[in-house]
Length: 259
Image 1 (cartoon, rainbow, N blue to C red):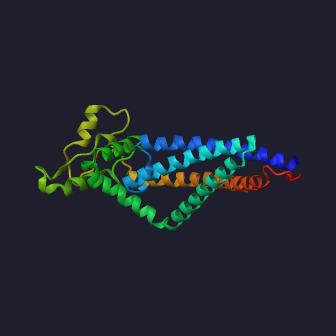
Image 2 (image 1 turned 30 degrees about the vertical axis):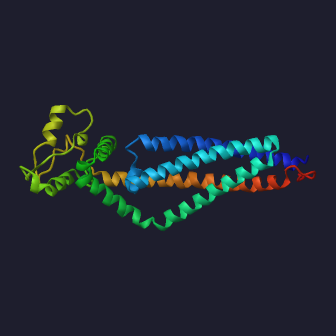
Image 3 (image 1 turned 120 degrees about the horizontal axis):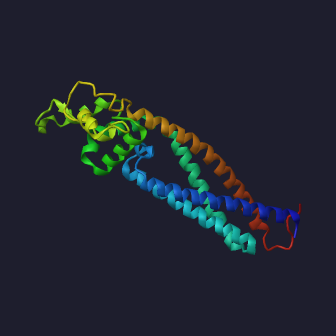
């Protein structure tokens, strides 16, 4: 057996171990996306689309887990069929990743406008009408130390929207999640209730930064990390495809690739 063939086998095993680690990380991230309501990615798409995206990440990670195990098994036991299956699964993932990257690049310009509209819609309508959205935005305001879409007075928009059914249309309230950390319940309550439309909330009690800019900045940081990590993963996957193809063609043959 040629030394070159053995070298490729060991390298292929190392690559599949890396895939295995990526798969475990992907499964962990998808579960985190399911359970953590404060991830800013919620605002990049509709709720149903976000759920679908999370499920896709989970399924892709599971497929990557399976193909990595098959890849290690196939070269360890010289099972060509398992190697072919592993190669095909990896090819599917690579094609899907490239397609997703192209789609994201094409639609990048509309992302910022969508996020702005989504955050404003959350403050104006969804916060009142949807308990899940309310929990999500309360968690974001508390953790990111912000209030409203662009400013705390954004919460008057929801009140003005409901003027027709309000007993006192000139007053509005701010969610308690806008109160600063370690603020007493009494001071917080006084600062967020029965505020006059047009007045400024007490900024010593209420966070004065809007959430939209912070969410967008967080997403931009995440996108940079995703691009760097995604590029590294894709490079390793392409190398894995090349090695897998070479090994599949040479496996179980009397003449191995020589060093």
